[in-house]
Length: 176
Ligand SMILES: [Zn+2]
Image 1 (cartoon, protein in one colour):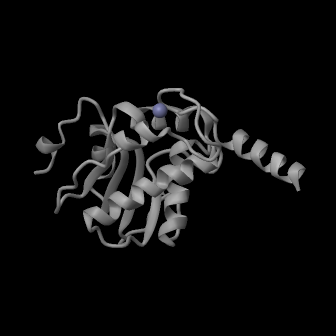
Image 2 (image 1 turned 90 degrees about the horizontal axis):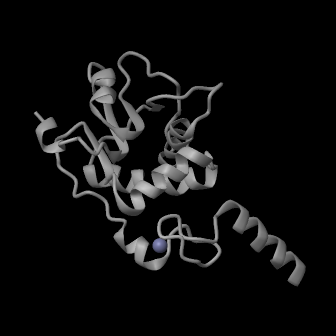
């Protein structure tokens, strides 16, 4: 039993670093952030009637989460990050999409955005696809919400949800 527990803990430590992703403090095995960093991780106050938004500003623990996702492509980290996207999706009161699509990445290049979109689709229980069909409402998942993503997807019937706002992104100016 003790051995099994040890193996499990070892496995968890492999999946989750035993140091806080942000401040590098030592943490309990199944956590990603220490208590104080978790408290700093706040969703951006949602605006209603917008079609693109992000969960976090790109700073502090959220920025560390983005960097870790990009570097590691860990499914478990994507799952945790997708949880934040879903929370923000609910806050935004957006309609349930027909399909969730990644802003980039594909079947051959399963990058962090691809994994993040896939996990989001799984939690929402909505199909995941590389592209949306005509007449479908799509939820586009991106890591950084910037002008390029918005330009790329704005002509489609899509909602765009990013993990973080681009640092230079003045989202209040972007809403019209
Ligand atoms: Zn920390």
